[in-house]
Length: 125
Image (tube, rainbow, N blue to C red):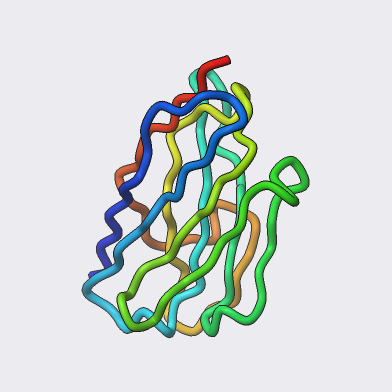
């Protein structure tokens, strides 16, 4: 059973940066595509970014392009979300998700098999 644990959330001023981490255990990390999603109060969970098993390919939602970057480190079984130029509308609970084994990375949250508990990001204006 794959377990995902997010960390790195917190309070930041608009224009600031945060790096979220998601530590994976219980499975062969390199066989899982990984994604980040977020959910703000009263809104649906939405796709933020996804990365392929090898880390060579990634997708980012249009509203974070140029600001957020997903990456992964096989040595530490960790996937990251570097968030720069944060805006108040980026405030949400951010979730890490895994899809696999041996599945491609996708945007839809229904395609992911494993989820972390989430980490809160708050952006003050």
